[in-house]
Amino acid sequence: MTEHKRAQPPSRRIADALREAIRAGTYAPGDQLPSERALASEHGTARNTAKAAITLLQVEGLVTVEHGRGAYVRRAGRMMRMGAQRYSRRVRTETGLSPFRAEAQRLGKTARVEVPDISRTTPPADVAERLRVSPEEPSVAQRVNHYFADDEPVQIGTTYIPWTIAEGSVLATDAKTGTGSIYGRFADLGHEITQAREEITARMPRPDEVKALAIPPGVPVLEVLHTGIDQDGEPFEVTRFVMRADSNALDYLLTIED
Image (cartoon, rainbow, N blue to C red; front, side, top):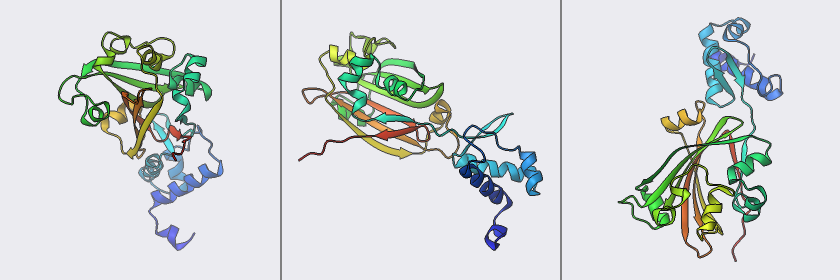
């Protein structure tokens, strides 16, 4: 053992050994790691030391800990967000699905979407600015969506629609919006999406996001502020997506301007 390794806390040495074993494939995604008791016995340490080692790997996002069952190597499969394709009329027409459901289908995953809230509300200032609506009155319809892939929570999307567009339509009332989903209904109302602006940032999750998305310790979120722009160059919807960074990836094909 090197002087460096001897100088490390015992919990760090155990974590290093497990990390190397995971990277080498000794423990594959979904495999259960040895118990804290077994790790303590193998490394000649206290059980609390082994528990601290598991916690280190959990914070790194390498393992998940299930209460009463043990620690498991995280599965690496991710939802791939296709920047331009996800909003195309062709995909919407061919599949009849929402962008998220179409992406899940392409990846062989089972999609599920829960809609816990549809209401008229006052928009956040950044949303009001992008939609050119008042930030001081209930000028938008809000739709909150929780997205699941193979029953694992992967993202939350909060869509804001100018009330002048949403009023009197299923966009302001119903969780199910029919064939082609929400963008099919926008097209029916004369707003075909032709451009999208997406502003992407990374941050640590808020407590409510940790709970809703079952985010392991140490895992950040990606926040995508999406603005849909119609054939007349007018913004007609803004959606704030909050995504688990360990469950999502972004793929964009960009047309370069002159």
